Image 1 (cartoon, rainbow, N blue to C red):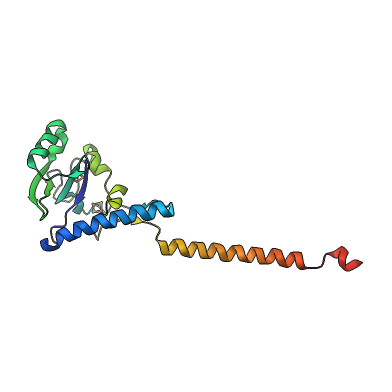
Image 2 (tube, rainbow, N blue to C red; image 1 turned 120 degrees about the horizontal axis):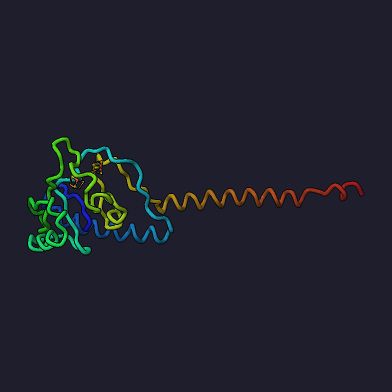
Length: 181
Ligand code: SF4
Ligand code: SF4
């Protein structure tokens, strides 16, 4: 299972287009990483705000969970996921969940026993699915852009030209034995 956090404060009407946008963004990110051969990096650290532990979207076998029946089946096979409680739906019909292990101080009361989807959050796959971190999350996704790659290429070329120029000048200078004769 994987998870993302649904920001319920977003206007519902926009949510469908946001989702399409996320898919397109994910596609572009995968394409860019592959072309530039530069995988995304995750930087920063958790500031323990706890915001990613409520209004969560859960994914199973690559699909967001939209049915309580599906969720019950998951809990039956993996009881530790019973900590999540469906609390509503977003406007695409996907279930949103809260976690009963989130303490009043926004800390996880089951930290040592938290499921893999919590241990791995935020995962790089979230980035490649077009997901975004919460604005005040202590982590950041860092990916090379086409502009940065072009800048590096230009810098490399300039450095190479300088070395080449220096070597050509050296060759053109009269050698000591040439000047002695
Ligand atoms: S188990 Fe802990 S880390 Fe995972 S959602 Fe619940 S409170 Fe957050
Ligand atoms: S939103 Fe980011 S900073 Fe806040 S608890 Fe989650 S991972 Fe940590």
